[in-house]
Image (spheres, rainbow, N blue to C red):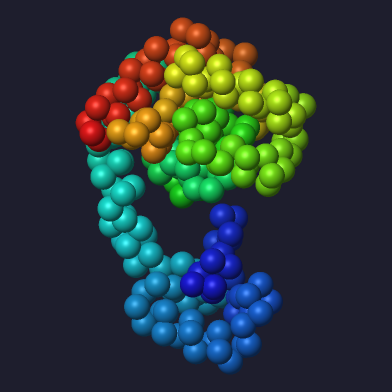
Length: 233
């Protein structure tokens, strides 16, 4: 697991030397472990290095919680995309971050720095704020303790300001982001709630900040999130 976790989103492949440097695992041990992983197709050897294998993708697709969520959400996300023609995301919480488990790209929208399995901070993304507004006790404090790093000039980095934003989201059921995570991008999101009222996922649409009418599109996002919520219960 240490070897596999050494791969970062930008890595297509790594050399054995890079793996040993990142993990601290001695080269002979890393060489042996890579050989065993390759036998199971968990990693693949190339002419220049080592890359993650297809077996990892297959196993990830079998993860029951995300599979059930994605299967349930699929028709609602498709309808939301057809209604808005904007990039659609489905994300789940993981600690102080969000993980994207589904994405439908819009050809007319901006290039969004998100990907399946990718992570973003919760405090500055639409899906993240929707999740935090309906999070278990203590999660917001954990996010603040981890640090509110300024990613753009509009990123909210004051804990009090974030708390006020989350209170408004908890009241309306709608989260908005206007260039807080990426310059030029806006987003509107809504939570998917469990039976206990805690958010298990969030749905969003993302587009150009100068063009995306978050107020007009918010009801469509909210409707999709409510539909997924009802189907999961």
